[in-house]
Image (cartoon, rainbow, N blue to C red):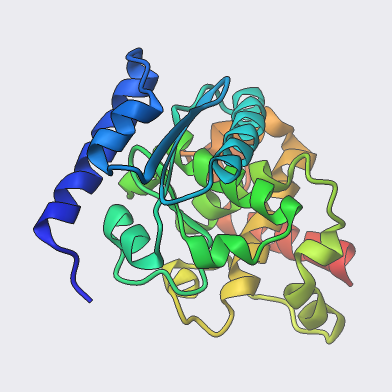
Length: 260
């Protein structure tokens, strides 16, 4: 189903409102209702701005609290993030806001300047899962990952998961359950995941994220969290003093120790 031009204009207005909010102008629920009469809500956290369309205020306040916690974690690892979260009423609106062809199976997406929540996918997550997803996507905002071309995808996605799970307290074998099953069966990946492995519908999509996460975990444990940050946008040879082959071998050993 297509989205009418009027609705597209309103969505654009909501994003302009969100951007102005963190730039200093303080939006109010009344201002938002001018854009979506009787339906829009704006909630400001300590470090975040959440804008919703036909979403209960309590849900927006909960999201703002999660975005605030995520922002503090990201600041500790990387630096400040401009945390704008938009919560549309439907998955269709989410796809439009994110410029995505489809959102099936996703809980949120990052664009260059905001995180867009996918209502159906987000609703299925546990509280911990929601924290991880919001932190992951806000990390993409902080690093500019969605601009593309700066870092390999395994590092972009692995770093976002590293920050997302950093304070979650979830056991490694729980996070990497699919990959752990393969490793216990004697099947280790031979190379770091590439762009095709992260494509929607990839048969080993979960394992690709788990492989990338554990690659970044390995770097942080061996070279320190600052070493992982230095690696972002660089390469393993100049940053870690390892060739690609040496790094891959060390990562595979790490998988065997962690998941075997």
